[in-house]
Every structure is written in structure tokens, then in C-alpha cells.
Image (cartoon, rainbow, N blue to C red; front, top):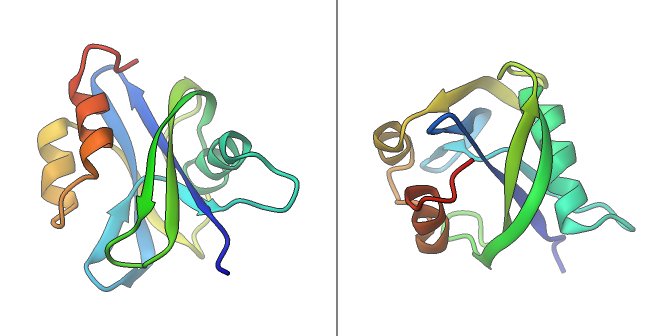
Length: 130
């Protein structure tokens, strides 16, 4: 069985953190910082680690938004809402990430052509976005 993937959904000042994959997987080019949950690690811990490793930002987990089988990769992805604490978005792991950026909700829709997972979109569009 494939390991679970934890995605960090990080909002800050009305924008959302995305990373551009160094190697696209099908139509999947831009995504939330994400990676495998290591043995002994919680999904929240993995999301925090991936935000730092891929985008150079320090975050704290808030809540799990939801989970699904990703329509492109087929992997189980758990989306973790996170609050930005510090750090400028940058491609912190050039082997995996070509670019990291804060994008508007319109920019999010443009960069993820398959659409954002419904519960994540609702979270980001709601008043709770940090």
C-alpha cells in the first residue's frame, strides 16, 4: 500500500502557498506543499515538515480539512490547514520544487486546471483563511 500524502494548505494575507513541481506528473504542475507521511509521524507533522522542506516556510497545523484519492496520482492525500508563522516562499528543495509562490484565489484556480478539492476550496474561500 502506498503511503499517505500530507498536503499543507497555507493561507497568509489572503493568498495561498503553492509550489511548482520540478518534474510535473501529468497535468499536475502546481500543488500545495506535500509529501509522504513518514513512519511514526502524524499527518499534521508531515504537512509542517513539507512546507519547510519544499517552500522554506514555518507553519503550524490548525485542522485537517479532508482527504481523498487524488484524481491524477491515485494516492491518498490528507489536506492539513496550516497557519504561516515565518519565512519567505522559495524553492527550498530544487530537486523537487522549481518555484514557490503566494497566489490569489484566482491564481489558484488558474494554476490547478483540474480544480481544487471541494473542501479545500471552501476552506480557502471562507472567513477562516489566516
